[in-house]
Length: 291
Ligand SMILES: [Zn+2]
Image 1: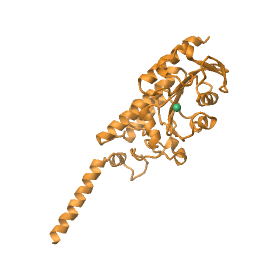
Image 2: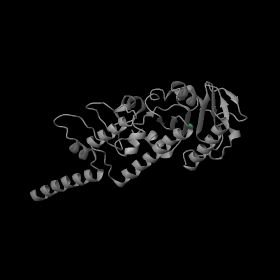
Image 3: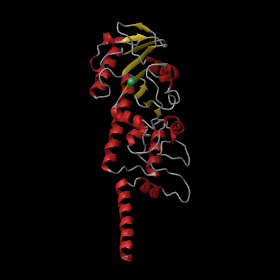
Image 4: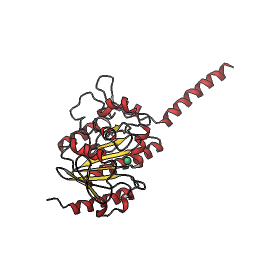
């Protein structure tokens, strides 16, 4: 039988970790755990996640109506119960505003894959859901196109929401995603982002299927392994695209050498600038010679 007090302690503990990581400023963020068929423990509204006590937490039903607790439940509870209804095996949902992952949702920049093995194996492709005013069912419904295919979503111009079988497992994806997005931004600042080769990407997918971790890309033929095509259909509506990052596409065919595509796709702006300068220099030199 589930020990509700222990669940509340765990929510407070994850709340401290979220706050200390800078994932929830002031009173931002909310956490929930489904204790049985029709009861969900959740964080209250207007409370700093870093300083909660078990007694501060609320209990709601699966419609989001408050059934226990002296504080008012979070205003974003519909997001949590909507995920739990669609994925009955999900016990916990964590929503917060981790800065690096949220930045990708503001820039509407598709999060590239084929860069870090752990990310590809444990997280996979991460979609960006369209923007909606927080709080209502319309906001909760923005994750519906993705909820069956992933355990973490970036919410455009807002934050992230992740879910799992325990509070820690749900939170863990958020931490993994934000660390990844931070590394991406730092690498890009250094001027060069290298991606896995087609062979390296396929080896990782093989490893995933060996470990029994599903990935929509497993078994795809002639696909664009590293170009986020899993959620590409949603890009039109959300305005998401590859602008800051340009992952290589690995298409099969005589003219598609992965190595060639890889080097072309990872050409940095510094390299492009050098090329433009070389061409300009040659043109100027030719013009000077004519004079
Ligand atoms: Zn929020």
